[in-house]
Amino acid sequence: MGTEYAVGSVLLAGHDVPLGRYTTVRRLLPHRERRMIGAWCFVDHFGPDDVRGRPGMQVPPHPHTGLQTVTWLVDGVIEHRDSLGSHQFIAPGQLNLMTSGRGIAHSEYTPPDHPDGMHGLQLWLALPDSARNGTASFEHHAGLPGYTADGVTVTVVIGQLGALRSPATVFTPLAGAELLFAGASGITLPLEAGFEYGILVMSGSASVDGTPLEPGSLLYLGDGQETVTVTSDGEARLFLVGGEPFDEPLVMWWNFVGRSHEDIVEARTQWMAGERFGTVGGCAAAPLPAPELPTVCLKARDRHGRTF
Image 1 (cartoon, one colour):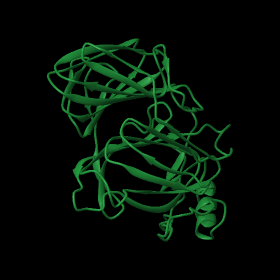
Image 2 (tube, rainbow, N blue to C red):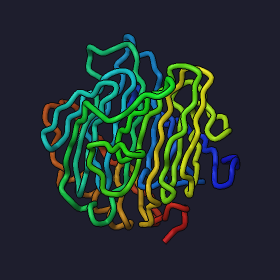
Image 3 (cartoon, one colour):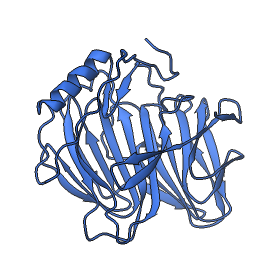
Image 4 (cartoon, rainbow, N blue to C red):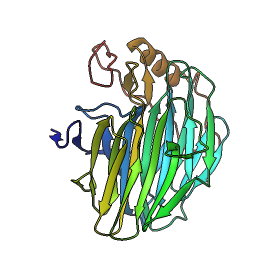
């Protein structure tokens, strides 16, 4: 269960989930007490892992619909291929952003000749109804806006934080930013009062508006705040997510985000039939088969977990 802190704040503990054969992630969203933060509907934190003599991330072609995938590395390298023909290596400090629209497939592999470490985030953004059946696309951003103050480096990965805006394409107002502490220090960040926010620690430890935070959990801050103060006694790396509350009920199942049980059934059927999502060229691995659907009807849920 989450633990209540300041008014509107909840500490959400992650849980371990295997990703492919060789990688385990800590899943922080969705959580039974907080399904979304803005349009952020899925947050996985992996590493830091020692992958010397190990294959690292090995995820064969798989489909997505109704979402954007956000990949952020702080150590290691991942090779991305998708059914649009995109082929991109991502290194630390770079952003891979894939917009599924109605449907796309991709694979994610650590190349055989890779660094010793692997550490990063994989996140999803739910697409609003106006964009979820649109055209798929892929973006790679090697340079992102940011600044350093009092030993803290802020990088705006996606969306907007204060006066800084990422060049990455978004479909709802949101924020995603990394905070890197070189040592003991503190920083006060500007927030949008109409957004809700959360902060997770990737390494080290920190205090967020007086609440201690360690790796493996995410602090939901709620909305209505115009600033947040983050301090650390040493080196630390955190990630801030936020956005306007997302008011459309969603059905999330496997790699699909839809609006109804029928949306999910259609996506699964077409993936298994080799339709709609295309083929990931250059990847020799067989596509992942979809799991069997549950025997009960999948219900749409809003950001509070209420069913429709």
